[in-house]
Amino acid sequence: MLGRPIGFSALLLSLISAACSFVHPWGDVRNVATRGQILEGSAVPEDVRRILESKCADCHSNQTHWPVYSRVPPVSWLVEHDVHAGRAAMNLSHWARISTESRIALLSRIAAEARTGEMPPKPYTMLHPANRLTDSDKQQIATWARTERKRIRTEGSAQKEIETK
Image (cartoon, helix red, strand yellow):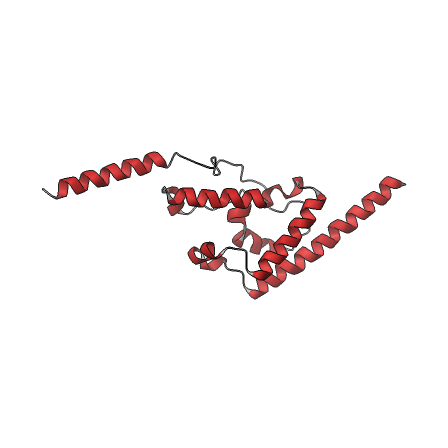
């Protein structure tokens, strides 16, 4: 007799969860074009690109890998919120569309937040320990960011020089 209420409750909970999976409080962040390369138009070495793709792109690009648990509310809402916030702060899939000044500022933030361990955030790395940045990763990212900022500034200066002639 006790089994019926538990079975009914489990069924009801499953139905509610399934219905809630169609609710996206921050918009349907899953419904984006995923093709293309992150950091398009930048001079990023392949080893740094691999680090950024494997450890940053889930939240900071349109190439998010959605684990199974990210489809079950309310966890799905938390994951979608984090992806929404990450893309709003910096979307590596839109790199070529970002202004020169904004790219320079983002490169500074990338280097600083990687170096200090602010990114990836602790809750994310607790669930995904393989995505922690090693000291070598941090150094490679910082070196690339510094080099890329210099390259962008040099190209900008050269472009301004051409325009003034």
